[in-house]
Figure 1 (tube, rainbow, N blue to C red):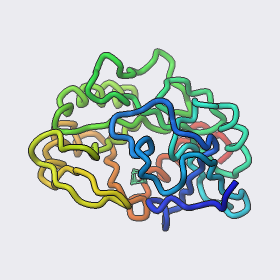
Figure 2: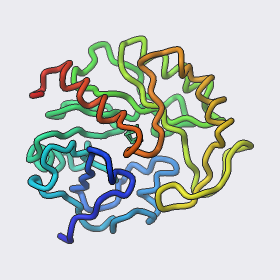
Figure 3: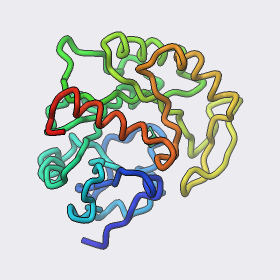
Figure 4: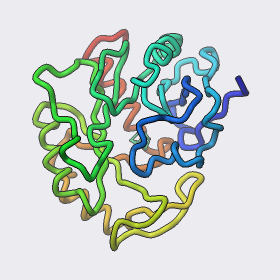
Length: 230
Ligand code: SF4
């Protein structure tokens, strides 16, 4: 295993990334930068921080993959850290810690989206909803379905590596790669449709973890709520 490489997006935040699988994620979410050879580490080797180095920081399992893929390996790796949360787009949530669930990995296909189950997992830290100008109306209904159940929602503006989905996008660098991103006006438009500002459970991923800290807040809220060791 090579030397650990920090995710540049997380530098300066209280979160560090962990990628135990060391192979490309098979799920293939649309526009996922981790499937396109554009990442900060080789996708053919694990990238695992030393627990002593991670210390009090929160370790995000599966920066570049899904915690339900090779889940035993992910869990065995994750439990070595003092603070850990998991990430998945597969609605299996029995992890030994908080978990973020992406509920629309195929953001243009509502038939595939995950709706709240009858019994929600107590360790569900938040759900992630992928939004753009082309899916905002239907994504708004998905968001409401989750916040009605008192689940925090993280709204993620889609970035496009091949082509913009329509008007209102501009191409510039995000962390390390050029991509098509919504303009400020487009972001506000999409957020308005999705209900931002009218629902205290709805957060917007701002794209710079160092300045944002929302995942950290959601992690501690979940820990406190579930008494998973906080
Ligand atoms: S919500 Fe904030 S802390 Fe979480 S991934 Fe987005 S920018 Fe980073």
